[in-house]
Image (cartoon, rainbow, N blue to C red):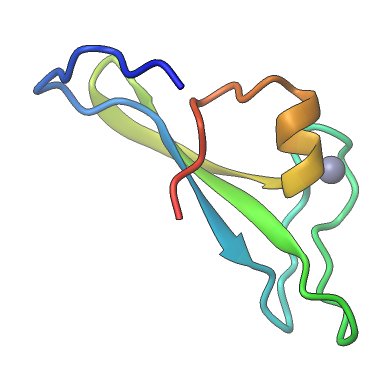
Length: 78
Ligand SMILES: [Zn+2]
């Protein structure tokens, strides 16, 4: 994986997290809910989106949707 030069400016980044019980977010890619299912340890990708160097909003994706969307906010970290 290619690492771009580190910049001091804040930029959008993505992390992978387990989906928690009670999670009610909507996936930014498929627009379906990112739902907790007791028997599956599903992951979601949470992206902090920075616009012009300042935090703007958070987006949620199903882990697979994030891949399908070609990592819009970079490769997710654990
Ligand atoms: Zn999705």
